[in-house]
Length: 388
Image (cartoon, rainbow, N blue to C red; front, top):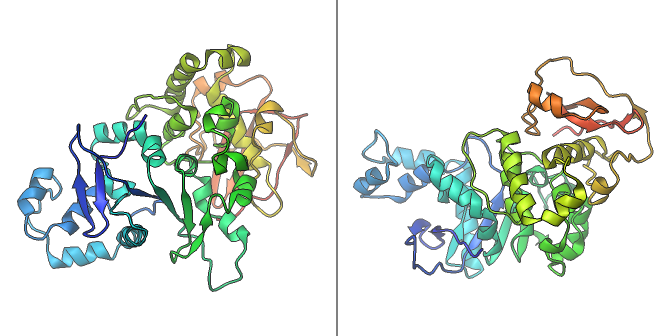
């Protein structure tokens, strides 16, 4: 699928440019990958406010101003103080310096109030990154200068814990990492060993010598282990491009329904694979098990241990270390937003006979990591959770 975004930012003028729905030639573009900061990101509506000077009518036509019919200087300054705008302007400058006239940034190039637009873009998001000339990864929680630089600082970035950033790492041909001050850290080829240690993704895949499509489905899913999404159903949607399927996102559906639809698509696309797995295998429960393992099995340094394909092929295998019995949840409805794990009775009915509930504390949140986690000899390795 050669889909490209229809709305880009001109890196010289820092204005949004829309291309016709059909027949338009989309120019080469850079793309930004980053962690969203709540309340600080620049929305499509706010970006349109900032870029207009004397044409409030055009804004009103786009429905961007709402009750306002003008944009005051005070409002402009208020918007510019957002860190999201500074990030956009810096990304535009970086792209401009590298010779790119256009860049795509999700926060302001997508109208989040338009569910149809969001669904369409989610469906083709992998292609957007795949067809970009370069992907800039901005790590706002990493500082390369002013302190002794270690890869451990890079490895602790929250960027590596998000669901959507997995495809943003895999899809583009060229991925370059920057710290909070826009100092270049390196590209994914130079950092392949550190990224492999973090994610379990083989260096050959990161280098592009092994195609993602040649890697088996279970292993590709294991790369998502330990990652989280803000909306639980996005845990399924963020895998679409990686698994090589096209599926219409459904606004408002729960995570189990999303995975049921995803599994139906996968069975159609890879019938032999699912025949080998067996009719009883449920990819949603498989991903939950991988998530639990990724969070329970960690190094003593507080980094996640991503187990790669071995986590799928050898279920329930724990590395040697101190063990402790899992705790039972004290709250009948603990928060499960972190993993998108529903706590409904239907989920509990789907749990296998040897399932246990593993409850961990991440920072100040008590989270029910899984209701479908297979026990390994009745015990689980439990290390201290990192404090983010």
